[in-house]
Image (cartoon, rainbow, N blue to C red; front, side, top):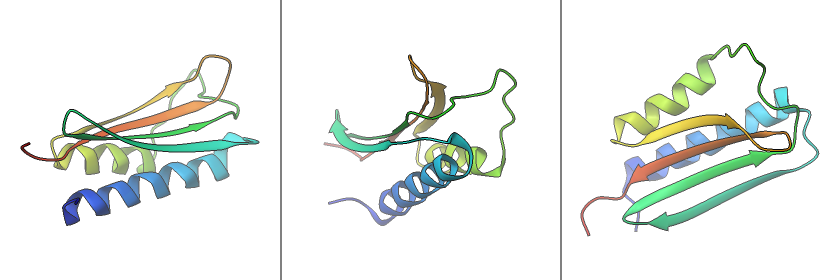
Length: 97
């Protein structure tokens, strides 16, 4: 069972990442993955789009995803995928075992 804070953060991070794929990536496909490892919820949103520009301009959406994860003691990163595309990866702690 997830806490309400983790549920909301997960929903918002995935929603923002999918919005970015739709608006900016020019992707043909996108994958959303959720896994639990070591009492951490791992979120991955990967696309096969144009990838990240050499000059990264973090907008409100990317900042909001990082902030949501940080508020829970987690992290959120955005990186280029080998072969093209982008991966947004967030790790949200689930509490004590």
